[in-house]
Image 1 (cartoon, one colour):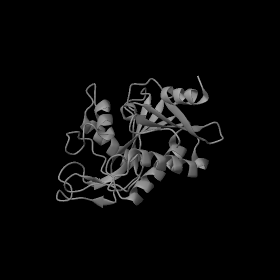
Image 2: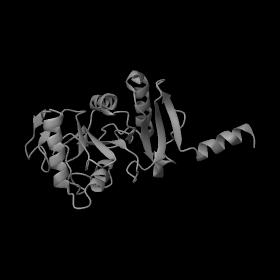
Image 3: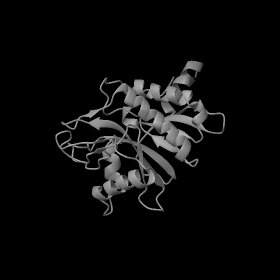
Image 4: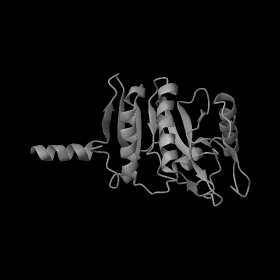
Length: 232
């Protein structure tokens, strides 16, 4: 097999690419996979959410096929329901994060769900039990309008991503961080997943000094033919 054949074979079989060496023993990886697949590893999972941190998955307020919706459905099993998750997130915001809403909405502003909207980039943590391996970090990014359509400006997107990077630096406790391509829902300018992925990697490179744990950006394996993780 020639040189180019070897390279082509490598690209076909390699599902993980190291895109940044922080030169402190930690790296940023991009990989194909399923972010929310069962995994016995202790880790932190970043989930993008709306800034009211809603938990009702009804294909109206939250889509069941979104990362946010899939995460909520995975958490809400075994007798644990979305109202309990909602109470836990709101309690974490108030008591642990010491956060205050940036705006109190009316039913005319948002006809369903929580009405307290938090600043962009606010993060609420949830762990199902003390023994649970996975800690979920919900990052508030999009604002829902009166039609429950998620909206995020470019500036808000940049703020949310920077908040995630700083959160990883402060709260990781050296646990590996797993996250999706941030911004695939609620973007007004409809950037492609590849463009968003490239922006994320550039942001990690700019913030190299804040990387103190391994970070994995997971691209859904079913999108392999549409979203390349190579040459980032």
